[in-house]
Length: 375
Image 1: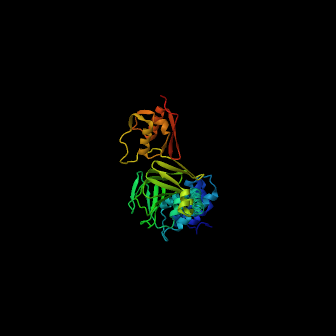
Image 2: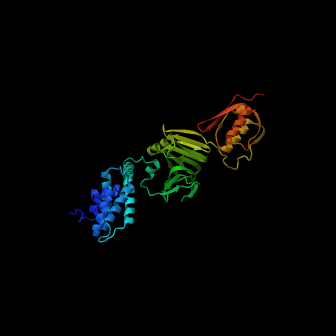
Image 3: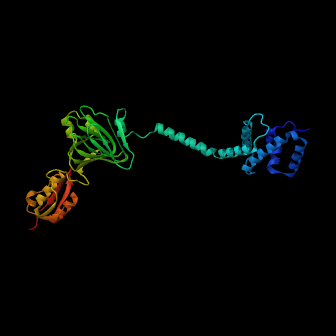
C-alpha cells in the first residue's frame, strides 16, 4: 500500500522519514525517494518543493539542534507557505528561502527584542509615575500666559521687552514674561543666566524670579545666575541698586517695612550668593568689579606722592564700592604707583604692599587695616 499517495507538500514536510532523508542524505533513503518520484510523477513538484523547504531549514541550523526547535521552525515556515497565492502550482523557492532567512533572524533576535520592549515599557512607566520634581521656574510659569524665549545656541541672545528693558540671555537658558506688563509691576521668570538693563519706571518695579530668589529693581543693570543644577544662585549688580529677597519671604511680606527687613540691598559691583542647602544669602563683591562710568570718574589711576587716603577715595568713587579705612592714619602715607591697567583687587594689592596694610571684603565692602606709615 502506498502510504504517500495522498500526501501534499505539507505532509511530506512533516513526515519523519522524509525529513530524515533530507536531513541526513543516507543512500538507502535517497534510493527510495528517487524511485518514488519516478513512480509518482504527479507528486514530484510537491516532493521537490518540500525537499527545498527542509533543506533551507537544516542549512540554518546545525544537526545537533533540538528536534523540537526545528519542528517549530518548520511549522512557522509552513504558515508562510499557506499565505502564498491560492492556486499557485509552483512555490517560489528563492522567495521561500528569503522568508526563512528573515524568519531565522527574527527568531534568534526574539529574546533581545522582547527585552527591549520590556525595557522601553518599564522606562515609560517610570517616566509617567516617577518624574523628577518640577523646577522652581516650571512651577512659577505653569498655567500663566507668558512668552518664553530659550537660548539653545552657543552665543548670547538679546531680547528687547515692551517697556524698553533689555535682556541678554546666555546659552542653555530660558526666560518667560507677559507680552504686556501689568500696570503695577513687571515680572520675569528666569532659568539659567541672563543680564538685565532695566528701563526706569518708578511706578512699576521690575521683578526677576530665579530659583528661590526675587530680585526687585526700578532701573539698573545687573546679572542673575540661576542654573537648575547649581548649588548656588547669584545676583550681581553692575550699576544702580537692587533688592534681593527669598521668594518665600517676598510672598509672605505683609507690608513694605516688613519686606525691607527681610531683603538685602545690593549696589554697584556687589553680589549676593544664595546657598540652596542652608538658604543663606551672603553679600560680597563681584569677582571682577568694573568702573561705573560717570562724569566724575577719573581718566587714569596714576599717582605720584599722593596721600593713600586720596587714592582709596578715587577707587571708591570710580567703582562705587564702600572702602573703609582710618583716614587719620593713611592721609600722611604718600603713594606713587601706576594703577590704570590693573583690576580693582590688583590695585588694592599694590597699595597695601606699599603702605604696609592689608584688606578684606566684608558684607560687600572693602575694609583696609593699617598701623600707619613708617617715616
